[in-house]
Length: 363
Image (cartoon, rainbow, N blue to C red; front, side):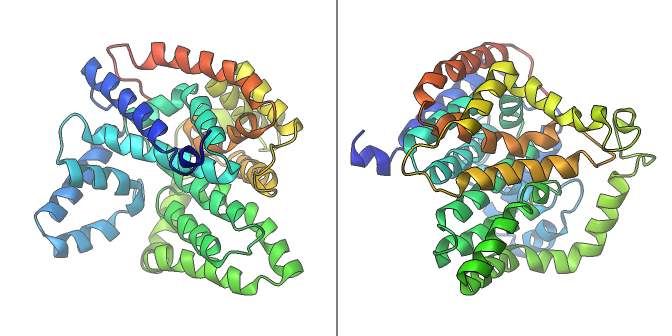
């Protein structure tokens, strides 16, 4: 590959995502599930901006709390602000979220080719198609999580103030996108803590904290008590907001409960996908990828799984932020091209299931 392609390889995912959006428009489908009400809020926010109603926007936007905090609506609001509406706007928002996943994989892997392969592996997961088409917030949270962790890896053990600040800023964005997103962010902070203590990266740590504080702290200072009340209520087994409570009976450490999300993972990427991820964990990474990326991703996934397994309310889509991280392994190892045919077959199968049918898939 040429150096120009390595620097500007964004054109391939842009073309692929444009082709995906064109295919969905051709089916005549509209968003389903939670999509309509989420997109309705984003559309109204964009209308305020287009009409110059900044006072109303500055009052409405921070007031969003349940079921999602404000930045959950940001990509869709941007799409409606630019495009104004129509059949393409919500798909442009989904494509933007997937592009953020690709960009984070590019940074995590240190390779445009690995990022392309990672996006291909993502395309093999049906839940990704569901969420992108109907603007699922779990996919938005996943994009913000992978962005944050990619900057942590790119900081090269917190040598870079810029990447440290962006790590914190994207963590703040994830905190303001989905209340489950921080579950995938706490464990990699342990690695950062080791770097700070062993290598004296205190200034870079300050940059990361400042990045998070600028994005998230003002809103949480204002809304923190309400967030805590909402999160506590939604995780109570007897609350009306809870669902699937029969799946979490008994101790969280019971084998059935611990195995619930791994079963969801198998449902999402299939047994071949799980085998490919396992091989990626075992095989060495290609030269040029950030050395810390492997452990950052492992800790993020295990940390998220540990907390999710202990929650009263469980849904398969809560695991979605782990998918853009897990696809790193088969996409970045030295035998990545040997594993790629599995992703091609999976993506082709997902295309047949989700891009051709007449009914909008829901998660």
